[in-house]
Amino acid sequence: MKNIKINTKGGEKTEAIIFDLGGVLLNLNFSRSIEAFTRLGFKNVQQELSKLLHAHPTPGNENIFHLYEKGLIDSSRFRDGLRRMAGNDIADSDIDMAWTAMLLDIHPENASILEKLKDSYRLFLLSNTNAIHIETLLKARKNGVLFSDLVRLFRKVYYSHEVNMRKPDKEIFEHVIRDAGLKAENSLFIDDSIPNIEAAGETGLQVYHHQAGTSLAAVFEIT
Image (cartoon, rainbow, N blue to C red; front, side):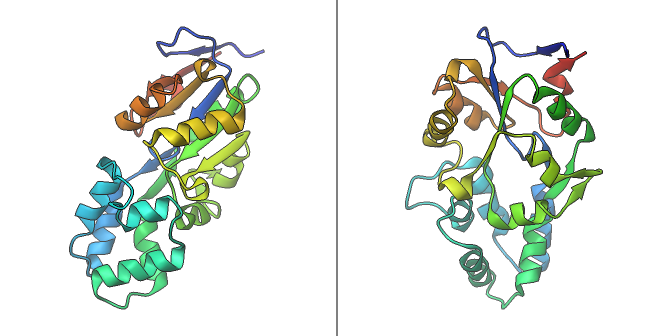
């Protein structure tokens, strides 16, 4: 029987844990995609991608990256929109290569920790993501870890482009709580984004702000 200590401030008993993907389980580097798009001839991609990271747009004020993450446009329309943005007839493969350049590695220790946690907690994945990224990751091995094997450790995964909602919209947290049959006060949400943490906390979830790029060993002590 594993002895697991959770290093959070929550006073309630934890029965379920909801993990973010990028910045928590998967390392990201947006600069790599910005640089790749710039080489393809994009002029304002840094500004538009920054909105994806920092802005909380209202409906009707979402850029192409927000729309794609919410599944409101498909991959073909996403690529066509990027071609219009660049003013060049860029090949699908070049767009996909630039868009996925931000996807780095999975910390090997994180996979091991999740494997141990799944016997004691209900595990879920909640990610702002998109079809091209998930299709790429499902074929990938990162630091010896197959992403498809990582996904199998969760009771259910919630991808923004499949549920047509994205963080930090409060409704996506309410959807996960309701769909998974969770008690918010007994469920812990882990994310590297302060706006996401704040929105999740408003639903009654326990929350933990994870430092991007670090191991989950900072959150869990397993002996």
